[in-house]
Length: 267
Image (cartoon, rainbow, N blue to C red; front, side, top):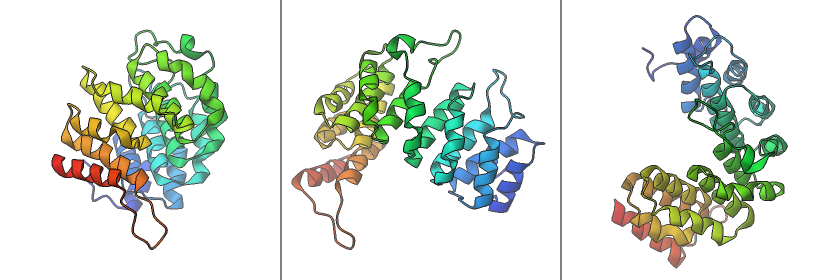
């Protein structure tokens, strides 16, 4: 079994070989996990996005999924086109990983392709028969459009606030807050912190942290969820509000100090 002591050269060599799918899968994860951005690593991961050898019983492409996730972590703008092409992969989870990776890259050239996935609106956003997911990874698509400040997508995103899947509603609210700055969308996420479903509460915690909605701090700290997740969400708030000119300490407002106090209480 491979270990984290794998070298960069070994990881790239393993990814480029085709005899052992498990070694290739692990190598793709490893290169992303340790942020290996060498040109040879990037090239091997991009090549893996077209892999046909590693197939799951349901026809999916596990290696492609890991390669897309890794490329999102490596922040190399040259891979944007390759990831955009993955948005049309027959594997739902490859499309999801590619959408998330494009958000991580901040690649605005993908906005048109992502918006195209919303054509048909909520009525087209239906489950795939016999599968545990919808026809498209709407959560990842909506969140990436929000991250990329794709204001042209606001009208297409808004109907997803009433999608039948609560997690998709969350993603739409998160994106719309990022795109409009209107607090009603962030407050929708605050309401979800009271959901009877733990997974939805966890999701809302991460969403509020990601958008940096400071008025949610007290509600985050009081959420019935793991303290570790609440701390991550509160740190997300701080990360977006602790800014300062280079070489100078950040200015600590009363609200930021209050968030720090909440974090201390959770430790």
